Image (cartoon, rainbow, N blue to C red; front, side):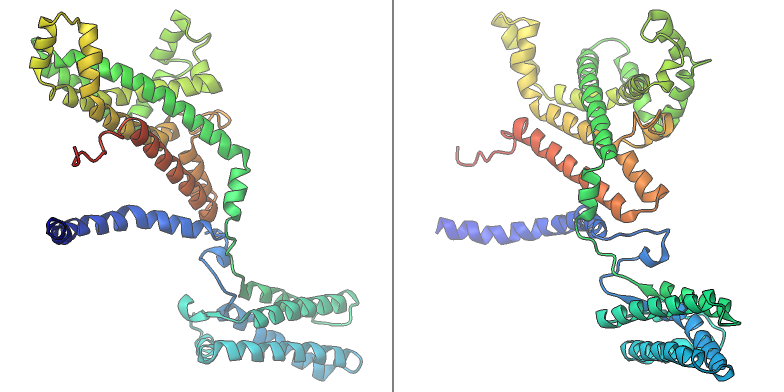
Length: 432
């Protein structure tokens, strides 16, 4: 009877969380699925024949009908003007083209006539009408026929047998642009990217940046949180001022630090030179090690307050009577920290480290503004590399592959954190 009651309570509970699940699927999961789908294609926006995903062969009737009628018309006129054997050769070429045209008509159906009528009226057919899927057999026939026609016309041109050879070869050379081949390549992009040294270099830079910056931010943030958690005069003002670096937009703070690191007039660069951290002011932004140090330092300055804020929230929920009781038992500050503060702060530490690590691994704007990934890609992160491939090179297939790689890395990081830091937080205590 108890089991039946639990089962009956399960359905209403599921209905309550169903909207949240659907929202997560729509906002979080769908873009990942879409990126994975794009990564399976050779999708390039700067190439018209690869600017969309194509699983089948297609033909652009707009392009085809701008060349075919004129080519056949010129061939017919030339056939009437010439004698054998040239006449027979041109007639054979014309017959090949007509057979191909008949196959295209059969595959295109009524669309062929519609597009042709629009072109005869000097109107441009819409892309959704002009682009027609054709069979693999017709596509094979198209490629073989057009290749053969081009070769034969070029040969006649070289023999100087035709007076209008330039016009005929020009029209024939435009026909291959009408065919659109499938750009599905499966997992080839993953093979290419995972064998690309630049990908691994970007991942290594991202790993170094993430580990060093998050470690420094956690230590400094925890120290700041412990400090501002103590009651003292002016604590509210100190708490507000600590958050200023985090409140400044990343692009603004990166631009500001660019001037501070300047090799000629940068105050921070000059200070580091004076105290011996760098041998020369220009080292910070002109060498690989200096640039990475500059990026990490800027990120630590900006994001440490965020870590401190999250940890401060965890510190404030720890009951003070625990510290009072431990003091009565003779526990010192260090023992209280390791036996009371750290255990009770585990959930806050998990949240702070998890959020900050994921954010650091996806870093883009800070590096893009501060160093642009330079010098010589020594500070290029995986997100910056994905941006360059996707938007600068307009290679959406390869860019989507890098986006999926970033997603997988982020998923692994989340699993590791939850496994080693948050397993007891997610355990089921109902049976205890």
